[in-house]
Length: 143
Image (cartoon, rainbow, N blue to C red):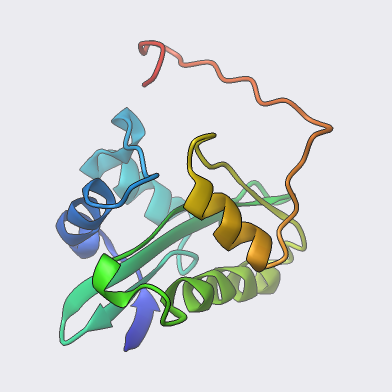
């Protein structure tokens, strides 16, 4: 297993993985251009896991200089329960820490039971004291 920073050259393989991963939903912001902008604004904070040149895991992270945000953790079914997801999370958290970010957030779909278990097992806490509101400039209700 080889871990390295994600680049836009990983986009097609990442999208294929995301589309095959239950609990991952793609939106307009996940276009090639959107991901390229995200990676450019957050260099060295997103990672892929590879086996023999094939992407088997992804995670994206960034920050607003105050809080970190983690997105699109996905591991190929063939490589789950091998520590790949945990290692990808650790890489992101270390990279965010190096940027001075001490606290991070993530969002998962309400019906993603496997995701809830995974993040809870890593020590992440489910928050009941905040509510998330979203607004899409120029987009549809789920853009």
